[in-house]
Image (cartoon, rainbow, N blue to C red; front, side, top):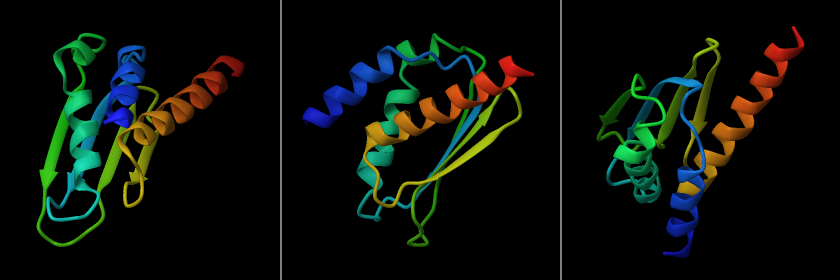
Length: 110
């Protein structure tokens, strides 16, 4: 429960404006699917979507025992694919923040 509260507080402080498309693929019977579903629920929350109303979101539910995947397409045409096999919901957001910040820094240098 504590990690969920931490995740939601981190999410409220993050703007989704640099993300163009977000895709989540998971098997509901995978042991880590609750973390991916929690991340998905947080990202698609009304308050979070207000930071980028043009964000395209897609959820694919499969039944093939595959690991959860989160694919993030940024506005600068970079793509981040995260395998969520061992990650908690907050870790997805941390990776997206790190990747997004590194590419924003690169575009400023050019």
